[in-house]
Image (cartoon, rainbow, N blue to C red; front, side, top):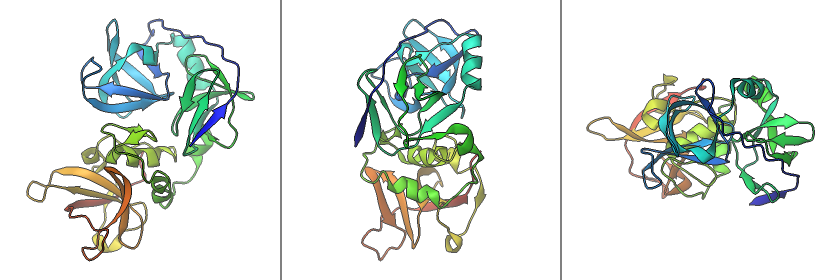
Length: 276
């Protein structure tokens, strides 16, 4: 589902070199590649408003590090490289996060927005990282400060994941346009203003271990290789033996071998975490 927004566009695309080696993702979903090439593997994504460290800048591509420590290459026209002054303004500004489960589109700015994007609040308008302005889509955003201040609700995690049932699997994906298993989990935590590492094996190092008979809604289940113990997949536990995960598409499956929704996946670990 897409919602059209209206608003005048003021394009101030500051492509100056960042004074302190910082950049901000300026598009709704920005691909991070393993190498500086469009044909390279997508290792992850950065959503609009994500502040990244610029580790190396070339003519067309920059190697960056995201807030969770993930590294990859992003093409430069997907980033804004602000001065120290502009970066400070960005950090101090009141911001909102897109929390609507559907994509939004602004015809004037020719931009789209997805859940997890962060924009500056400016009266009745929102300012994108590159300076473009759109009307504030009321009901589709949440103030970033209040999001972070809310008590963590683990039961909200499977509810969030269920909103994306049927969305296709995308390696490295972090949005409603497509996501991988750890991306879905990370999105669910981000919706509550919490951060988790990018990959499933990294997520398995957070929180505390729980037993099979004490699983609660919102716990994370990690699957993998029975012989080596290597973690290759993660899901969000729902209830009654069911979990939600991204495998071919976002779907619900069961841990019960007798269930028609059972998948023959080997459970490696179960964790309960609030993120960080």
